[in-house]
Length: 337
Image (cartoon, rainbow, N blue to C red; front, side, top):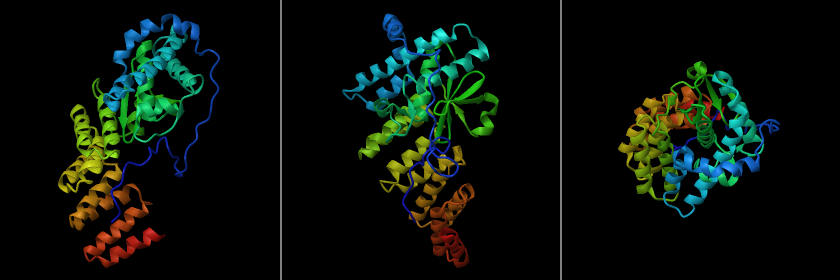
C-alpha cells in the first residue's frame, strides 16, 4: 500500500473542479480606497500601541517563530500593514452601518488587498505567516487572520470560520472568502461548508500551534512537533486537522500505529468527509495486518473520491490479502481505467 498522505491543496481555493490551478483576476483598486502615507504617519503610533497586542496575526507569528530573532521584525511588519489598512478603511466606512457597512468593508478591504497592498492568493510550505509576509502571497488561513484583524480595528465585528481544509471570515450577516473577494449570506454557510466551526477567542492560536508543528516536523523535530500539535488540540479539541497532522507527521513516522489510528479515527469522527484521513487510517490498519479494517476505510475513501486511483489500487491489494480475488480484480480494473 502507498505511503501515508499529507493534506491536499484546499480544493475550494487552490484547484478548480477540473483539478487545474485556479487563477484569480488582478482587479484594479477602487479610486475611493487608497493608502495615504501622510494620514498613516500622523496617527500610526497611537494605533500601533492600541492594536498590536490583540492582533491574531501577530500572535500567530509569535507562536510559529517561537523566539526566533526575526520575530519582532515580522510582527512589526504585519502590524504596520493592518494599521495602514484600517486607517484608510475608517474613512470609507464612517457613514455606513449594519449590513451596508459590512458589505462596504468586504468590498474595500478586498480592493486594498488586490491594489496597493498587492496581496495575492498563494500557498507556502506550512501556511506560515512569515513566509506569507515575505512573498505577499496569502493562503486562506493567513488572509482570514489579516481580514479579521483589520475588521476588528475598524469596528466591524468578525469571527474566523474553520471548515475542512479551508478558512474564511464571518461578519454578523455575511461570510467572506478573503482569497476570492466573494461573500455570501451567513445563512448559506452550513450548506456550503458542512461541519464548519466558528472559532472562539483563544482558538485561532490553535491554528498557529498546528502550523508550528508542521514546521518542526519538517525539520525532523518530532518531539517538539508533537508538543505543538497537542497544544493545538488542547486549545481546540474539535480541530480535526491537528489530530490528522499529529497522526501523519509524528506517530506514523515513529511507527506508533495505535496512536496514529486513534488520531485518524478522531479526525474522521470530527470531519467524516476528510478523505485523506480515511486513507491514512486505512494505511495504519494495513501496516498492522488488519486488512478488513483497511478495506472498510478505503471504501470510505472511494465513496468520497470515486476517481482516486491510488485508493482503488490500495483497496485491491487489501482484498488480495483477504483472499477476495474477484473484488481485487475489480479494484485493479478501476485503477487502470
